[in-house]
Length: 521
Image 1 (cartoon, rainbow, N blue to C red):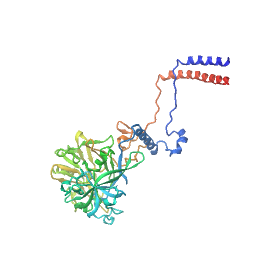
Image 2: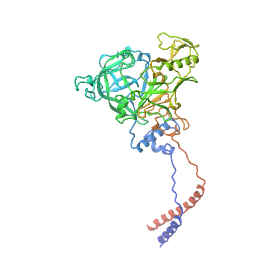
Image 3: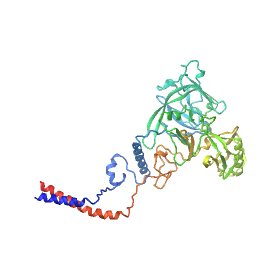
């Protein structure tokens, strides 16, 4: 009878408790809380709270969960296997930026110039007439440059004249003949010629997590014969064409589904830089559309609505210009050049002079051996988007310091200018080929693939954000993952009192249940 009485009491208590709402609660614990440390510490290092490593690990976990939620990331950032770094080697190499790439099987490394003004990737190959490849010929190299040969690469394939990539097929004697190529450049008598080959370009992927290797088939030029500037040290080990044509490396990568149809270049003042295939840039960036040339988007052309020197905006300074990383300096149409140069001359603090061998007209000697503050040059685009060149000058140095400087712009005939590499310094330039626009943001060219520069506190934003699809954002600003509590609503006080009385019933319930089980034994 005893257990029957206990059962009746349990049923009565349960009936009284049922009308009351049931709430279950659990205390949330942060993934890096001290009480979790004994559980997770064997799997890796434990970051100090609010340290750089702390935010990097939080971000990496968020990216991983996001990729799992999306079923894996289809697109990624790609860069050469030697890393995303670019470098300028000074006058010996025409003041251009270069990067190391690996081609073929087994892979061979080449130091190629970056050229957004052309499409084809070519490298010195089975040379008949090539630039010297010995490091002793160049003052800034610590190793010899390489020469490519299709016969030494297991993954190489010659392209026949019947192949759809063969633009010079009409010059072939038969469809099975190896496809020749010939590319001429803007500089006088500068060209590269040889045969077209298909081979493997070795790349790395990155985006905040571990990197992986990618082997991408590309068409490249086996450059047997170079001329002009290419024999004088400009691109002695080849050239990486980044243009919008179908034969450029970004086009091959995008058409293969490996990247977004875009890439970025970032050149820093210390002659270093970065290059990423697939980079669409941060959300906080300005942009202007690319313009067609004769109805085709055959190169990267933008339209400048007006120009300003310092705080003075000038009339009659609109022009079109090609964005070309393969041109060392900047050329403007004569009408714009004259107005801009004269205004610069009025504002600059220095005595007009000339320097032997200088190609520029407006040159100056400073009053001291330091570079004076020079007026900036602002290019204004559609919707008042502006591109500011803070130091549009080339500086000459002597043993004691600055001996002079020149406005690093030259006039050119016609109405088409060229925005060269010297105007790109200090910017992350995104060539968004998918949306046909050029985008830019100020940057110190940190490594976007691993986010070396991260917020040091929740309120500090990075000056060089990660790609827009790989960070949390609020109103366009990068923010650290937040760990925040929520204050209780006023109406929760009554609910709290009700929960307190409800807990009494549950205590009695479990006590009687224990007694019932004990009696049954």
